[in-house]
Length: 198
Image 1 (cartoon, rainbow, N blue to C red):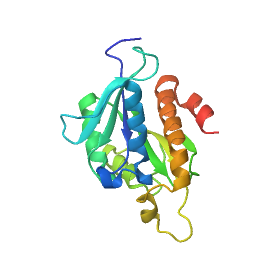
Image 2 (image 1 turned 120 degrees about the vertical axis):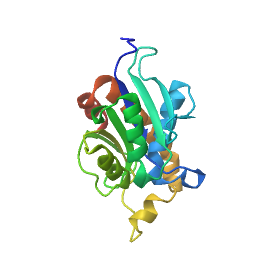
Image 3 (image 1 turned 180 degrees about the vertical axis):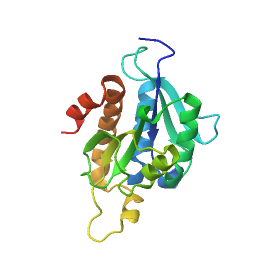
Image 4 (image 1 turned 180 degrees about the horizontal axis):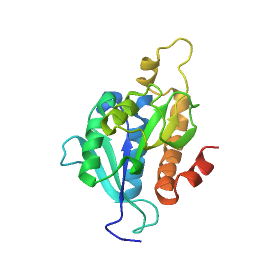
């Protein structure tokens, strides 16, 4: 199965670029693709489209897993659709082979949900992707961040750092989300949901 013409998966970590956003809840997508890049033994490089940083490789069994492009768009969350569409065009990837990794308010912190399609639930990154592709039929690895405590504004909450307790647990959630992406591209949605949506 080491066929170089095999279809490519585009795995996009949603987040905001720059060091000031790095630890925010909204940037979990970046953390997960960083972990996947580490597993591939590669560092991100600027893509020739000029609008994203990418790593290319194979996930899963060494040398024989599916071809993937890991991407971190260089735009802010509400504009990730443009750079993602440019990469999809470059690599000839349809929405059915795109995996978006993002934070999810309606899921408890530390929990994952994997699905295909659906609405954007007020998430600006998903909204931008749907708008650019004219479709929401891409895969989502949804990393729970929970709802803000008390009356804290949602925007303030997602654009703030994890608390001390969460920071201790975060590596486990990132690791698990990276496992979910590997599972999705190697064994498919149903088996991945059985394993991670429990």
